[in-house]
Length: 246
Ligand code: 4GX
Image (cartoon, rainbow, N blue to C red; front, side):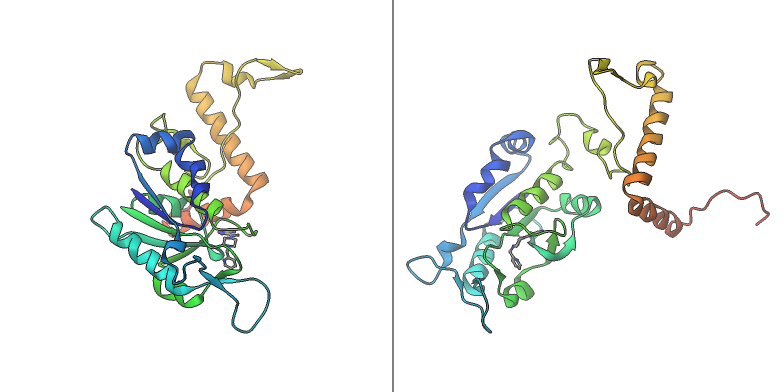
């Protein structure tokens, strides 16, 4: 997958290109990365790409023309047979979910527009952006960290990015539930013991316990996820067994 980011702070992306599993995968050629600074497409020598908002008010708005040129340039540079998806990160977008990261992981490429200041001219969003995505109902100072969160969550769905083949399948949300608790040595820590079942060596029992813990935690912490799972089941025509004649 070829990921191109458009950002006035391209150096921030070292966090994902130079560290951890995403860096190793980049070196292995499992994905390609380019950061494009939209200042290079400014129509002034100083590289200004923002201006005051029409109608007044505080802050600055990123101008449409330089961003349009940056996106067009990114599309021209795109490697891969299918056109890349153009995404904008903002709190006004659709919430990012596990299902969305799986969908994006199948793409040949993504162009991620990272906004700074108060936002981006709406006309650019309407004509150059395929999808607006939010990483949560809170505000950060720019689209770079949200873009890196999206990139990391998408990249870990790609075969070979995680060390262990089924690590991604074991993640929270992979089956619509929260993850089970995990333990490692020592067996006893500050008078707290590892659950006996995990020391039993009975793999069927262990799998059952982990599944129960996942359901219990989801019920206690995220009942909304359980409700979504029930909704999905009913849409698939899955119902609880009945002893009544049909
Ligand atoms: N999930 N931000 C975008 C720029 C901005 C300001 C105003 C539109 C209107 C965010 C999030 C997020 C901060 C990225 C504001 N855009 N992005 N940025 N939550 O908070 O994705």
